[in-house]
Image 1: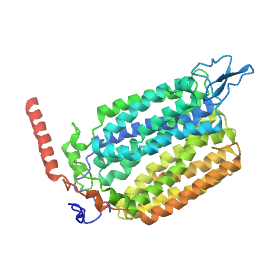
Image 2: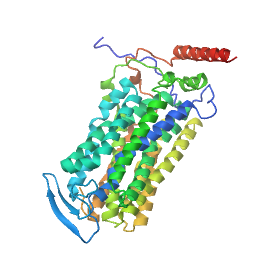
Image 3: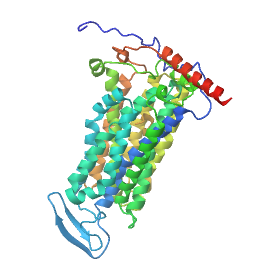
Image 4: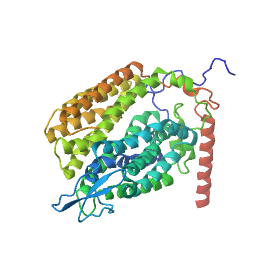
Length: 479
């Protein structure tokens, strides 16, 4: 009834994250939950190839072909003026564009406008329909858009390409909410740190992959920058097929999962393996200090990460004078460091939790501080060095530490330094907010207005009995 004091039921008396050991031992071998994690890793990898595909390719798209016979044919539209060569027609998909810096920034920015505006709606969709459906839509749409992107600027200029990026950003906003939902159903608490790390390192692996490929393709006349987009589109369709074929929204919906593994996954009351009808407690969420601590921290983490993701290839080219082929390699190395260290931090967090050395809240505070503050110092050093190898080394250390959170410019070094200093300062401030307000336990409003409370023991027993009866019938049929 309106006006009644909310009564929360089914909240665990103690924090089950606090290092509790499962009663049922983990099944041996490569299980169904590992298959789900592997496919999600592939999906996130491919999604990040499309997210970062423009960072290196923008250097190639806006570059001029190195020939003495360059004709500056003023092919003017309302959006852009282009210089083309004798060898490359104004209507060739391989042509380059002389977009100014502000235009380039608007194209790069478009993805994150769509991504940011659709994050909350996509979270609601993931909660309502499960994680599989939004991810599959995102991969399919991104695949189509990526393949057609090289032709779009020919007919609609930079605004057409920016629109493509906007659409990709809007659909990719579904990825993290949907993967959080999937992992909430598939990852047992004792393995959540590792499985989550395996999945989310797809962001680093995808960035490494596309930076390496982009430098290679963009520097090869036979392939050129459009091949980067076409390859990403093909990979997106392939990962879409893997998701549809191998992934189930939850353990109870998977047709071939063993009863033993299902019991292992769902024995924990905090694993959301069974559907629950809930009314979203917006008031409680928006007034929760724990929620705002996470939001602010994520904003600080993303500011540093996305600045480097979108601007590092340009910085390497303009300030450190690194050519396009080497640029892709150098730009990928910090993400290789981040990929490696993220796995390390995932193991460490599970070890500290399972051995009861630290609480969940303290693990998160420590990891976030390493990822935001210590990495920030190395990011400051990065923008003050003038040697490419030293800049890459500092950025590798910075991003390696940043993995703990698992988390318009001119050709003027001093302006770049101001941008990096502002970003690092923002990281420091947001980390302080996180350390103060972070919680390590499930918040009580998570169970608000829930019609089906508990661990799903009855449903689990019924499902196990059903699976066992099927196995018995198969044995009798084979005998």
